[in-house]
Length: 199
Image (cartoon, rainbow, N blue to C red; front, side, top):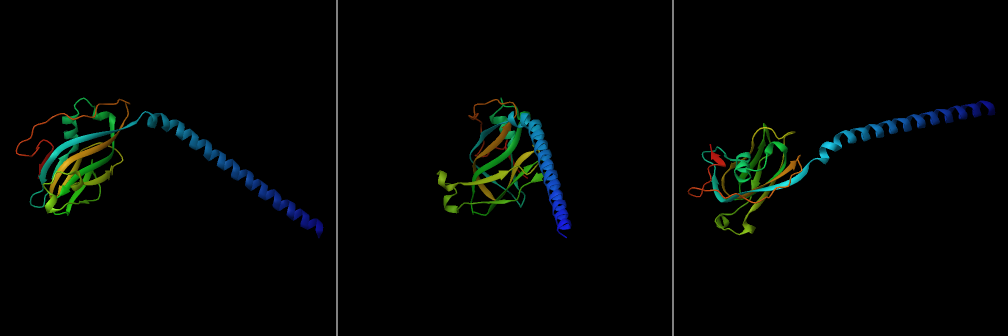
């Protein structure tokens, strides 16, 4: 009986030891696989520098009409204000809208290509609508809803807005650091129609 019991114990120990070795081998294989993937991906991620560009809109009054959104065309504004920067080398990561809506119920939505974020409410009060103080403006943060940066970049607005600026956070794959100043532009009657449309 003792001999049989010892044999069973030895057999069980052997099975456990084999399973532990197999588990260790699997873990090592997964580790080497992950290291290999990191080695492949790292040259691409290492070549990207995160940069921020400010698109100035000078407290432009932008208003949607008849239920259709007013659209801010971000690529067009970018090319006007930063003509020396090549957008083809950039990936859009994040957008920050600095604006306010007259009644505090205005909606803003980011579109990248054929992908849309949720619609976010933009705060504001009628009494503060023409107030230029920074404290009266809201900040709405959008993350790129698409897996790429192809196609249009635009913000659709529903309501009555004062837009101060839009900040773009981009990944630059050429590692060029640019001057982030603005290029003066002309407006007519307080509206900068080059950058947005009322559809």
